[in-house]
Structures are given as structure tokens and as C-alpha cells.
Length: 179
Picture 1: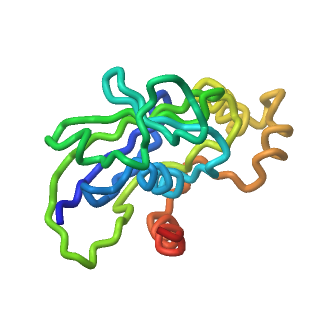
Picture 2: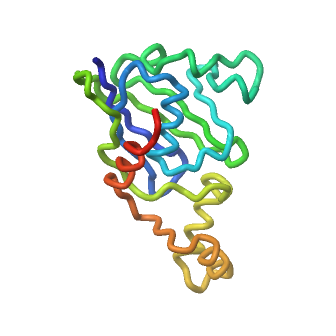
């Protein structure tokens, strides 16, 4: 079984938010979406799509546009197969989160292989924070006690720690998830 080492970079974030994960080459885009939601820390509360060149792939039940291919019938390996190839994953069209999925390596796995997150940096932005620009503003308010929005942002986010990342916690969530 071929296993893809994929680096997922959340575009437009400074400092960068990213994950490195191992997934089977034959994972459907639908299951890849579910995996990305888990490894990034999103809550699957919004529409999404994958984009390769001008072709879009999504769940046809959500009718995100015309001429959108069915993500349930398309595998990752059908779209990218050479090291250095990438695919765009868009989540929450209002906030406009874009993730670059870069194929870094093709490995061999045995039949017992299960997808796993191997590394990453920083906590995923909170849902509905306004995309990369809103997230940057949120971080600025959070980190400056004198910022006029500091108290409101702190109350909204609670114990949010932008630098926090736990590969162990992500992998526990991946194991608990139904496939």
C-alpha cells in the first residue's frame, strides 16, 4: 500500500500554522476532508472543496457550484502522484481558509497502516474568526493587554493558546473517529 506524506499549510497565517500527516494514497477526498478537519482542529461547521487547477471537488449534496466533481468518488492518488505536487483545500468560504496539501514523499505501508499526524506547529484558528486577516487581528488583540479588544477576545477564546500543538491529542482524535 502506498502512503503519502503530506504537509498541510494553512495559507495566510503568520506565524504559519501547519501539519504533516501520513494518509493512504487511495483515501477518498471525502475521507481526506474528515481527516483534515481532525488534524487541523476545525469543527466541520462549514462547506469545503478541493481544487486542482480549475477542477473543483466537493460533496454533491451541498451543491457548492456547477461542474463540481464528487469527492466521494475521487481519491487523492488520482489527483496528485509525484513528489512536489499539491492540491488546494478550501474550508469555510466566508472566512476563506485555504490549505496547501503538498506531497512530500511516497512511502510503503503494510495493510495495518492507519493515518497519522506526525508533526505540526501552532493551534488552528478558531472557527468564524474572519479568515487569515481576522485571525491576525485576533492574535494582536490577544497578545496585547492594552489593546482595546483584548478583554473581549480573551473572553471569547477562553484558554486559547496560539502556540499550542499536540500531535498526541490529534492522533487520539484520529483513532477515535469512525472511518
